[in-house]
Image (cartoon, rainbow, N blue to C red; front, side):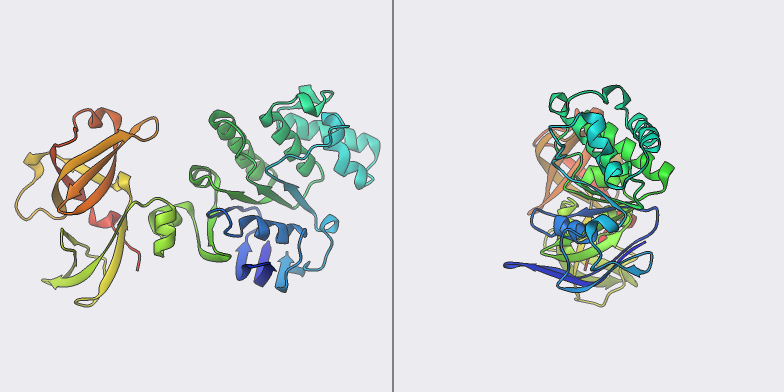
Length: 352
């Protein structure tokens, strides 16, 4: 288990902290945030590359704040694999084991075991300069894993790979986490990567952790406007509450939405959000007077968004809603069409 307690670190004008964070044993945790938010600094503090100005870092209850990097039992793989060009693949993987002075026979078995796990066992004799980007990243991971670390820290290990290679290596990392039970903390800009792999995600901005939760909590129930905007909730609206027959109704100049789970007082200002994939197009025959949360609007733009989706922009009054729809349905939706949108109350999140 990793614990950071009121950790602070200043670099020039940038200030990280106060950081309170815990990562459970065997968990695959992600740090997600914009460039310059402090993700890599936080990872390097855990690794021991930097020491905090204030606060404590604990591993399994032991204060390791002042423990040197080589004595922390941590594996570290960064965005640039930083392989030794004068060593072949086997030599790079074995480097950490030699530093630990493990016996030669034991080193050999461990090298082969980790190389097999990462699919590079046939490349052990290759020069690292001749490897592809994906192969270099696997060698870097093998070098980090071969020492049996209790914690593996990963700084954007998939960012320089093509989409298919990144997906495959991501699945490898998830399998390693499950099979070895190693605690993993990964920095990324890639939200799909975090959704696919993470047990929990921490959102950082300007040196502070704004929210920690499961991928579903982060992406579908953000607790602040920055997180909602950062994870592309897209449809974020400010309005006021009115009470109608005991139900809370969210009201703007352009539309009203019934939100039964909104506990608020009359005239209170509220921010809500709904993800593009949670808004539905409904046929005119489904629209009846009194239908809950069905809005009439006009399509003003449309374009592909990923392999299976189209993104459609619908203007309701003076407000634009962003809607993701599967390709076959999008074929029947054209710019200028009058359409009906249904917003399920359960999919509407109260942000603040």
